[in-house]
Image (cartoon, rainbow, N blue to C red; front, side):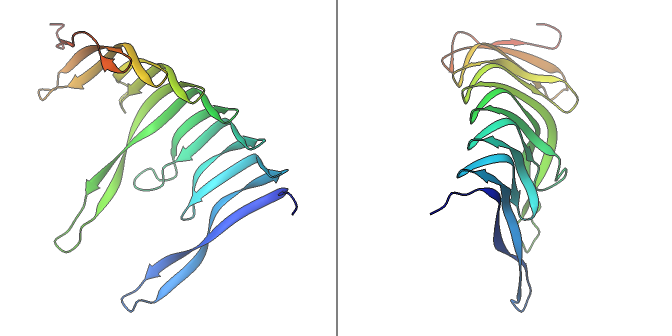
Length: 196
């Protein structure tokens, strides 16, 4: 049997609409598209979810390489970049940026239960080395205010972490926490907005 070489596309049949009379309308939807070279994914690849691009990036000899982008699929901001992750030799290496936090909100009515995604802008930065969290971590809210910062070592929280929480009266309290191998180590310190 020959090796895969050249353009490649996978499609699936999806149901578009089910009516009261249970008539169904079907269409072909693309799942993935890219290139193969000697049976290995090569060059630009895109993944799709119900007709919308969900992820794109490059392969080299069957392994992810460079910046891979994923996209918001539903709710407000659909189509915007959700995250950017750097890959080297198929493993996450370097900085990963996540631009949204998704929360599912109940929108049920008296007759039907339902929920919908609400995407809130954030900036979550995580440093990776060989597919493990290693280095600086930061979470920044939509107003550009630092919410949480610390360091990871081999996927575990380590050293000093700082977290800011807005209280019911609108003040910003600062919590300082020390970790050793992902476990709380020592005392938790809390400082009010006025430094106490």
